[in-house]
Length: 252
Image 1 (cartoon, rainbow, N blue to C red):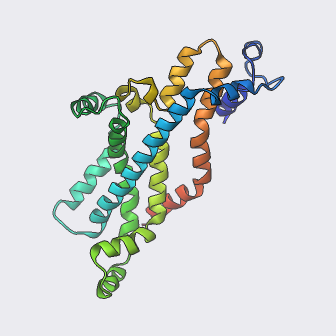
Image 2: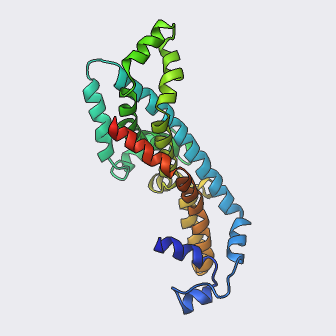
Image 3: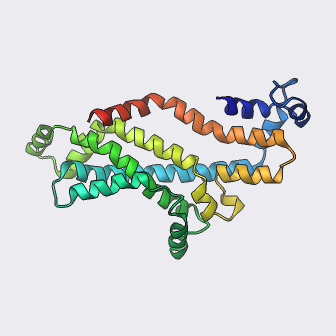
């Protein structure tokens, strides 16, 4: 919490206060740094880009991850174990290693300098974690429930939407939150894909803002703390669901 508190409190100080006593408290408290950042169009453009990217990534991860996990957990077919192992191996494949071929692929698809070019790779790199968490949830659903639903006339899709989705909701919420926070804090991929400052997400917006106002340390700290705030609030509100979802995955 030390760096977080330093950044937040530093936004309430002046540059002279920070220079005179870097670790001191605001005396007096200054609100102008935060109000000026909130009044700037740069901050809100970056906020909008991060929101669109994070929501798009979360929706794609949850939808594709749930469907793939359902097949891996409930269907028996040749190569199922190998396919599950392939997704598990994806946990050991960081985006940093693949950034150059990934950039070439995105450029070949004509998606550079667009939010879609960030969303699609983020979905792909978040799928391994999603599948590892969701497969135990779906395997734990008793086969008798599926048999009873089939006798009552439910189709495979009907069973999926009416039974599987509600029963696996803790895992779905957990994976959705992890995907949202991972996308919100993503820096490497947007750095390579986005060139237009109007499309910068908040991590890139912080870097760009700090470059423009390098001598105004207090305002940079205010911009940084406001950029962190949505992810911190989001994580704090859903912390119990994350822990509960991961616990359920381990038990499954």
